[in-house]
Amino acid sequence: MAVPDRVLTNHDLEKMVDTSDQWIRERTGMFARRVSDDSTAASDLAFQASEKALAASNVSAEDLDAILVATVSGDYSWPATACILQKKLGAKNAMAFDLSAACSGFVYGLSIAQAYIQSGQYKNILLVGVDLLTKVVDWTDRNTCVLFGDGAGAVVIQPHEEKGVLCSELGADGSAADMLCVRCGGSRVPVTQEALDEKKQFLFMNGREIFRYAVRGMLQSCNKVLERTQKTIDDVSLIIPHQANTRILEAVAQKLGLSLKERFYLNIEKYANTSAATIPIALHESLEEGRLKQGDLAIFVSFGGGLTWGANLVQF
Ligand code: UT7
Image 1 (tube, protein in one colour):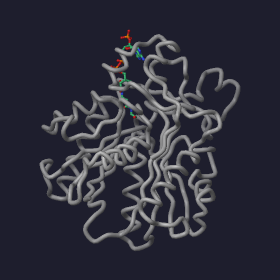
Image 2 (cartoon, helix red, strand yellow):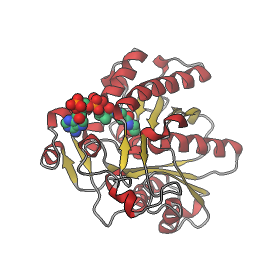
Image 3 (cartoon, helix red, strand yellow):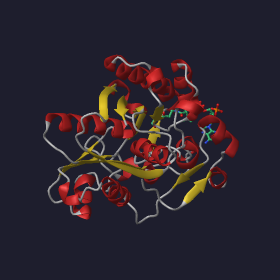
Image 4 (cartoon, helix red, strand yellow):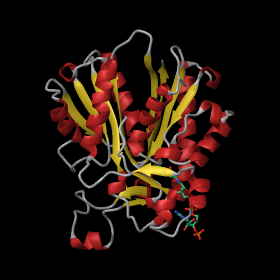
């Protein structure tokens, strides 16, 4: 994982917008987030996380067959941040592309990597979840600016007879695409002075509506991966969820009949919502803290813009 050094706390935000530490903590579970400096872009954090993932898995950059970068805040609209990362790593034998599934990007990416591995097409895949949404939030809008942080997480995926992704389940509902979006910069509304005056370059979110969808989508995804593999929730040691709001996770845990503290990994307090990076960052920290052992089953589960959602059932 990689996060910027600069820490922005709720108390710092109290000085920037009309908010309070108490509101942010109670409504979201967040306390701090990391914020990049002007010179840092997605490929920089992705590079730091990728180098660590390659070293940890004893794979050289030249061994990589494929680089997948899940992001909605890449260095540029195009070319793909994955191509910029490929150059930085010197991974000259790898194909590279970005995938856009917002906060669900890592779960989507893992499903794609799983399919490539199962088909035998690729043997060494680097998957990165990276977002720097602090670059696209309106720092005068208390509804959104308190919620996001920057970060990256990377994994190397290889074939294995027993371990790995057992099952992935993905979903989307484009009828609610306008609930969480950046409203200019694409071919629908290019960047014009008019668009900038209307603040369309910033992240827009209908948080209250998304909240309801999120609980339903995450719950449904968990249940589907269990059904499809004929497992029960009791077989699962740890759920590593997208970290958007502790209250969303409380609702999911309650509906699954689980204790949030014991069976979910939470680090939202430290990093807030890092979009596609929340799950790989949480995975890294849960491994470091010994929350996952050989033989354990875990669920990665997410929900985000698109709308998109999904889960992976993973054998460690
Ligand atoms: O990761 C991608 C997917 N995203 C999500 O899953 C996010 C889902 N949504 C949420 O997490 C929550 O809806 C939010 C945290 C975004 C908002 O929490 P909420 O409990 O749904 O609050 P609300 O939007 O219903 O707003 C309640 C009140 C409003 O005031 P009024 O209209 O009741 O007077 C807001 O203006 O809280 C106010 N408010 C704030 N007050 C202090 C909104 N943001 C703030 C703030 N500080 N930062």
